[in-house]
Amino acid sequence: MTTFSKALGVVMFLGGVLAACGGGAKVGDACTTSGSTDECESGAVCVSNASTTPVCLKSCTQASDCASTEDCNGVSGSSAKACRPKDEAKK
Image 1 (cartoon, rainbow, N blue to C red):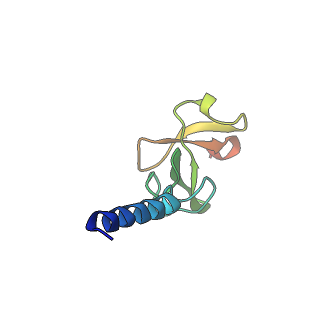
Image 2 (image 1 turned 90 degrees about the vertical axis):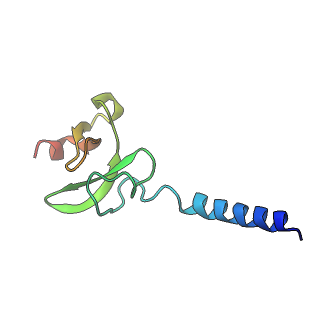
């Protein structure tokens, strides 16, 4: 096996590991840092409120990005916005 073949094998293995582990927590999963997008899957942001553990919620820029039962509101600690349930958004 040549050095190139070994290196290619390592790169392919690491690529597979990163693909399997990449993306972070899914929408609805717990996270730790409000405003962080690094902990959540693509298109989601970590959001906290006073009554629960922070969770990943769908990112948005306007209300039409969210379900009809949600509003697009700012996330503390960042310039991000997330789709929150309408009853929670009023708190």
